Length: 94
Image (cartoon, rainbow, N blue to C red; front, side):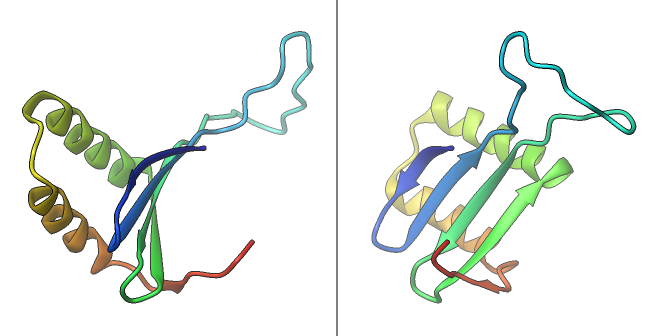
């Protein structure tokens, strides 16, 4: 898990799929696909959204664009606010 962004309004975490340790056998009932995702927490509303699959791919493209263009905090948070509109899950301690 990697913290990518943290402000008063938002937090973004990149969650990496667990890969088997070197020499460890992985038992599988079928094809195994590494699933990576992003959790966006809207601290203002206390809700979070988890992006995986094509949503995660689109968000990864956005992060790559930010790395090239170095946007302002306002630009980043405007984009995150759009994703936060998808948030339905209340944030709980785990």
